[in-house]
Image 1 (cartoon, rainbow, N blue to C red):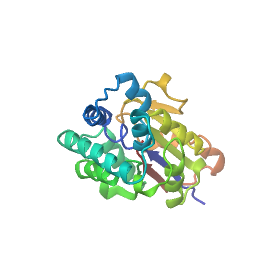
Image 2 (cartoon, rainbow, N blue to C red):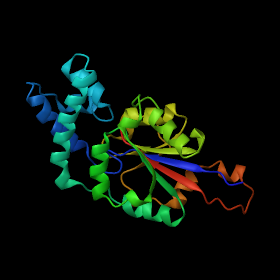
Image 3 (cartoon, rainbow, N blue to C red):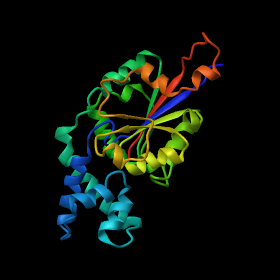
Length: 241
């Protein structure tokens, strides 16, 4: 019997290096409200956090319901306007996905960003056609470090959490993956190794990765499958922090 394996990738900071543009959008958003968060405050309270957390933290009051939806759309609209001319995938990821696709790997994207942000990136990065599952913030009730987005993606694709690897770039995202009982690859686009919880592997980009590299993360495979048994059905999921 073949065993399915899932690899879950975050979107912001993992598919594209968007965090500097999110910072620009938030600075513009907060400047109209006479707020000026520092770089350290952004690093601690923005990267990898949900918009509800960010707005509540910096506005120093609960932001709920219709007000939250309006403020989120204002900020995300600024982000899309600023980032649209600069959309570019992290080095090697398109080739990495092509290599996985050539090896009959099923792919998916799971993000806690709004669908509009995901649509912007998928309109510029040529990976949509390989994706068998797509999730955005509208599909989840709880955000990282809650593992909902990862557990739901794994369930949608019919795999067990223990058979998943998550690619993440933020503290809360790595924590969410660990909370889900999954392996984690830390993408060092926004943080150093020391700033993240312990990961199984760290990368700066995707140039050295391949289908075989993903298989090697599952060191238990040789103990599960008889020698010579072909493992052909591996699933990858992409997600956002």
